[in-house]
Image (cartoon, rainbow, N blue to C red; front, side, top):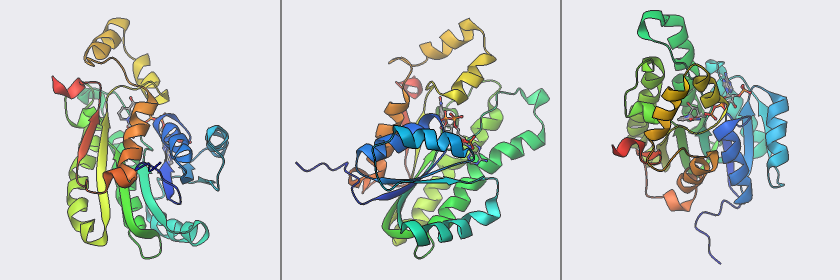
Length: 252
Ligand SMILES: NC(=O)c1ccc[n+]([C@@H]2O[C@H](COP(=O)([O-])OP(=O)(O)OC[C@H]3O[C@@H](n4cnc5c(N)ncnc54)[C@H](OP(=O)(O)O)[C@@H]3O)[C@@H](O)[C@H]2O)c1
């Protein structure tokens, strides 16, 4: 039976693959027949993700994405071994809840580096000759924080909003090269990142966040399904878009 979401023969690089959404995306890609290059800093936790995936010629590739200048060369070397990439998912990301009065420029810079500048460098690396296959799909993990405001979230929102706007311009720039660029904007999904954010909130505040999602809170698989949709043939006519996966959060 024809499955338009099949990823057989596709090689996909997933950052943030050691945890949360990146882990769920890696697992789903493997179930759809794709090969995954798993990227994050912790080799041990990447290996943990690998152990949860369907068997395949996957590769654990520890790398610190703060090494921005090294990213394109690293991708060139990597793909000389694993072959050209059909897609890239940038799920590595940092979050901070910090009111403006205590926000330091250095903290904002740190977030910008991993959330935004690494996305740009990865896409620059991806479009190099030999690094990507004839057609490519790039997916950034933005957030509903790019689309709706919440107090104490300005730094994080700024980085996630930057992904939404740069994805539109890169979609225009890279369409002639048959590269699609899109964002996912998840609502609150239980992962280590949201657990850390939740630690700073009171029960009533957490309940208020849950209540903002008419369909209730999501699961990592809800986001993974959407990522696979954009990576596979199902997404072939979609570029420059931001898809909210948020149980209705932004429909208010
Ligand atoms: N969970 C949510 O509710 C939610 C909602 C909206 C958007 N998002 C976005 O979705 C993405 C994934 O979130 P998550 O919840 O899965 O977060 P998570 O569980 O905290 O995972 C973050 C990932 O980023 C990696 N990472 C961080 N800094 C890195 C660096 N310098 N180099 C390489 N990898 C690095 C971490 O791996 P190592 O520590 O091993 O390096 C980890 O794999 C993020 O961009 C987040 O902003 C999440």
